[in-house]
Image: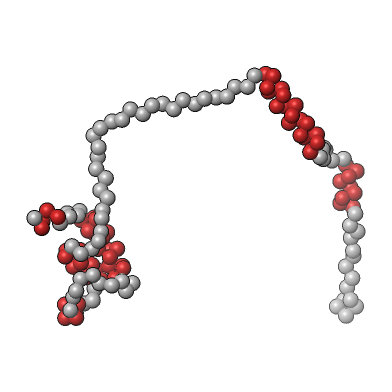
Length: 136
């Protein structure tokens, strides 16, 4: 009866459980198994050995999710994609509304004139460097 309730873990699951619990113990987590100081001395206060002892005693509150292969198939219905088609009249109306918003929206962007570019670059005068006579 007691063996039926005991979980069987694979070696990989055991390694993962013992490693995780050992890390918790090394970070000063409380030890779940009552161990006297002499037994701890025999284990050399090793967190992995203490974690293994806790796992063997069955005290660890651990649950493992083991995915098992399922041998059944499900029919999945194809998703129907509904495309909304607009008539020509609706397209023309939408374009006219969009053009109206753009016209009301503000500034029209256009190409820059060469004269405007010269004004932008030529507006700041250059200063010549002045060298004091002490340094010359």
